[in-house]
Length: 366
Ligand SMILES: Nc1ncnc2c1ncn2[C@@H]1O[C@H](COP(=O)(O)OP(=O)(O)OP(=O)(O)O)[C@@H](O)[C@H]1O
Image 1 (tube, rainbow, N blue to C red):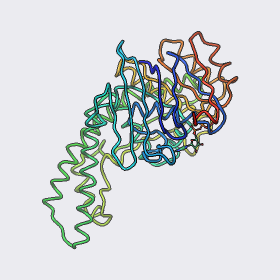
Image 2: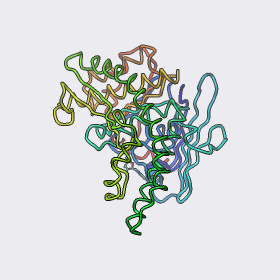
Image 3: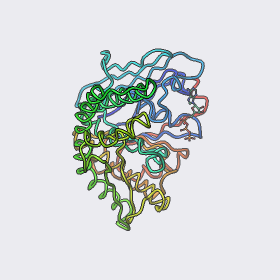
């Protein structure tokens, strides 16, 4: 799958701009703030219907304008595919594929497989469990549409159950029958989500460990493991056990919306005990494993976006990653960097075609 061209209208700092891309490597170079990351984000938007960096749609529209349009032309399995994402202030975002509007975004997820490696990934280590759940859910969703639908149904039930708990307190009342209906539904969807996450991680963890060993030259051992209360007790029992706590808190304190991943190095949490370099390698391994997994499931080479990669890694490690394009392993690669020379010297070393796209600060106004 190849992104042939991209047009942006009023997307973040770009007023109107068009790009033609190389089938293999594209290097977006220019000074800080010229919009390199914004271009990667626009490509991300075409795959996921949302920004990787800023989930608030209106903030992705260029200041003082009313709408944005991201228009991408792909070839996938020898067919042209035109995907357009557009948003108008105050209106629902629209995703079109070959002029047909999607009824639900979830139908589109997974159609244009993509993996992004960005400095923002550090949130996976430093932030709360929701960041890690989003990561697992994102990877599974790219190859399993029913998973995303189950997840949406589950979240809806949890928020309805939370509203009910609040209602009980506000009205000094309690109705076990209605609560039981929600418990049953949470149990039904939650169990499916738990099983799918557990099955996914069973495949994913060895891929991740291999990737880490390759990046760090096998120096230390790292582990990734799934933390879920559902591994010991079923959700219905957990909900019953936590009833008085939930009534007091007025929200649902158990379920797959509390699952987490634990990241360890030599048996200790990487957040506290990993060096910066080890944390960076851990994140890269995680993303490359995501790449391997999606490729295996979808049978196409995902697009790989490397945002500000030199900020994350030394030149040797960047070379290690970029060389992977040579293995026929990778499809199309987009790299952003402030230094054209540094990027070119790395991509020159491999035998694939490449294009250097130089961005200037006034480019966005064209
Ligand atoms: N909604 C918006 N409207 C106008 N400009 C925006 C909007 N959102 C972001 N920007 C601008 O986009 C620019 C940042 O672009 P981007 O992050 O892509 O830069 P970059 O080239 O990747 O920079 P760096 O090398 O520092 O990472 C900033 O100048 C910011 O003000």
